[in-house]
Amino acid sequence: MRVVVLFLVAFLGIVLRDTVFNGLSVAGGKPDFVLIMVVYFAIFRGSVQGGLLGTALGLLEDLMTGRFIGINAICKGLIGYAAGYSERNLHKNNFTVPMAAVLAATFGNAVLYFMFSVLIGGNVGLSTMLFSSIPDAIYNMCFSPVFYAVFYHFFMVSND
Picture 1 (cartoon, rainbow, N blue to C red):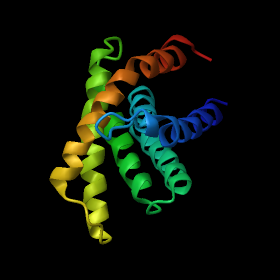
Picture 2 (cartoon, rainbow, N blue to C red):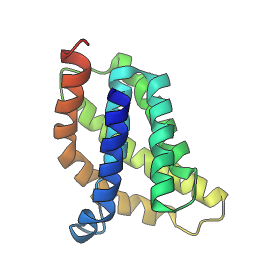
Picture 3 (tube, helix red, strand yellow):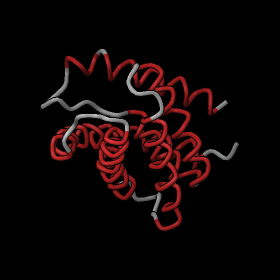
Picture 4 (cartoon, rainbow, N blue to C red):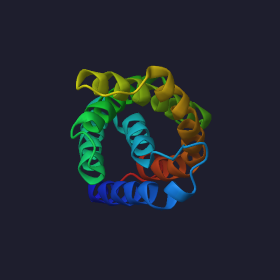
């Protein structure tokens, strides 16, 4: 049941990002709700489940946005695996540590997206990609406490 809820929230997050937050973008930045979800899910569930959810939600994002099919799936899958791999060393009770993980994941996702887009013939400069990810990172940090509270409640507090 939780996976269905995650997919519905990811769908809603993609729709909000591409509609509402297009008008609310600051310096071209928009929140990446899927990335935040993948990082927090991976932190609470581990590398394998984080990588699988990242790949699935990244593919959903690719299919909904119509960009290059598969790039977000690969990037978010790798980010989910890396975040889940580091979950043993993170203190989940301190919300600033997972927020820092979201910050690192935002820049990591930008670098991975750049690398894979160059491999398929994309025409984006690395400095442009990194500088444009700064507003995205700020937006992601603003929404991180809300997502963290929900994920902490569902994966740490409730035991069903």
